[in-house]
Length: 142
Image (cartoon, rainbow, N blue to C red; front, side, top):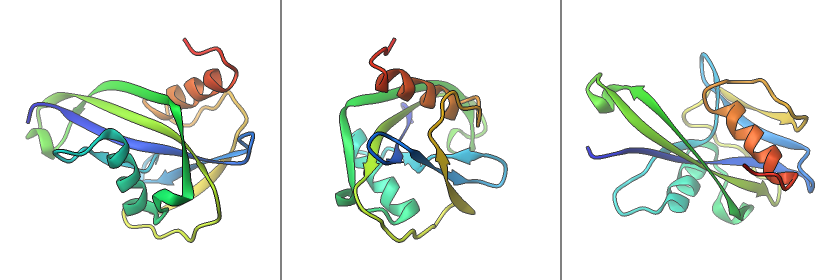
């Protein structure tokens, strides 16, 4: 294993954004995301994982072609044999174009959160992502 990389999509509703989607794990909120398969692009991975975890098809989402959030952190998992490895998370910004019935496969549930920055939901990945989206929308990316 040369690299751990996961890709996903922050799904929003409204124009301008009024809500965003998070998935419920037993101990935290998360995004629909997953590991990059060999030969797959980051965008292909993100849209595949979105479909697999929520039932939202790619044609129901409009990705912002200019937004790409990257976050690097250390992870210990079965994939790493219990060792600490660097991981890269890539998240795209997507707008839901139409109502879609949800089909959850890996999460306990989901929730639409009101877009009202600043958000304090989960410090490792969600909060930095939402802060970057807020800067992006205001035209003040770092």
